Structures are given as C-alpha cells and as structure tokens.
Length: 147
Image 1 (spheres, one colour):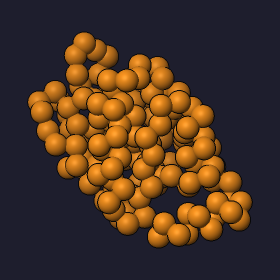
Image 2 (cartoon, one colour):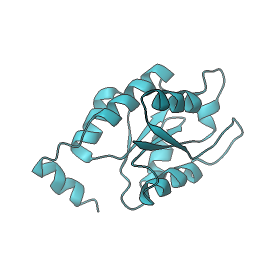
Image 3 (cartoon, one colour):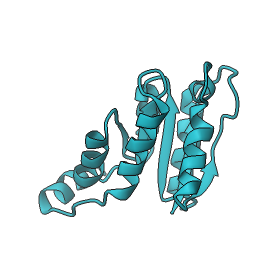
C-alpha cells in the first residue's frame, strides 16, 4: 500500500527519537511504499501545510492512506479534515485506531509526538493500517453523510 506521511517540526523534536523517520522506516519494514510529504527537520513550520500535502496525495490517488504527526495530532487532523474525502482521526490508542477504521472508514491517522511514545505510535499506525472498514450498513450510512 502507498502511504503518505507528513509532519510538522514535532516529528523531529529533541530529545530523540525522531518520530517521522521512525514511522517511515517502520512502514517500509512492513512492505509499504511511503510518500514523504515533509517536513524534514526541526525548524518551526505550520502543520496545515503538511496536512494539505498528505490530503492532496490521497485525493490525487498517489497514496491510499495517510499518517500525520504533530505535537498532539489534533491540529494537523483538523487541517486535514478540511479536504474532500479525507477522514483524519486523532488516535491515542490501538483501540481508537481500530474503531476509526472499522466504524468511520478513516483514511488518515494522526498521532501526537508530545503525548505518545514512538512505540505507541507504531502500534497505533500498524493497527490502523491492518484494520478494514466493517462495511456494516449503519457505518456506511453514517460515513455517507460526511460526504
């Protein structure tokens, strides 16, 4: 699967480890193709710019799913959800990731570097990518109402 990954400077905050490279390496180790949507260093940047890049990669068919990283995951998910067809979910546990996929057919997971360990992020991302949408009628109906 092709996965677009984007982060603001939080993905490179010190002390290490650097989350964005760690998540990208993890995705590659699972056999996924990774589309790097930036940023690539600790200099302050604006998270909406990178939410836009990941969202556009999905909208153009350059990636099927996305992973976003900022301090909490909240701001970057809000920014991504402005784009048609993007359903970004902030997840702080594997259970949230599972439900975001099963019930909401989320196509972007957002994690927070300042509230989760890298190991927790990897577990969340893995669960998110491995969980299919349930396809249950009630979930399809609700997702359909989101446009």
